[in-house]
Image 1 (cartoon, one colour):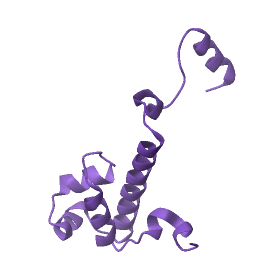
Image 2 (spheres, rainbow, N blue to C red):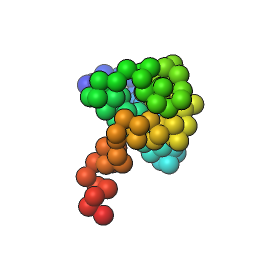
Image 3 (cartoon, one colour):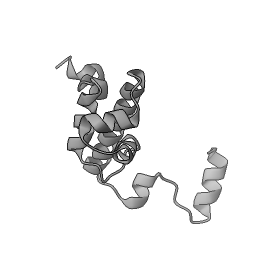
Image 4 (cartoon, one colour):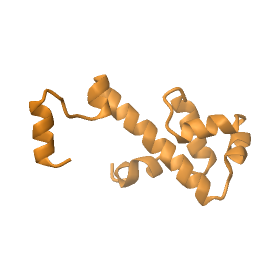
Length: 105
């Protein structure tokens, strides 16, 4: 959004922010959302790289295809346990989520 449009909206009484601002997430909650999204993206990326279907991953996890779809979409009702079990089931490692930072410590 360009500055002129932003100023016009703000002068009309609108507040400009993102979805996290709208729901009032704390910094810790924002970081948790980011972690969930990073893990879910890594699972999808690695699953596709290994040419696994969602059904095949679901079978490895003892879960359902619809649950795999939800975890890949970053749904909030998917446990962190299932997210990380999925990451490891597709051959992922923590560095696939954290990047090089995990190895430099």
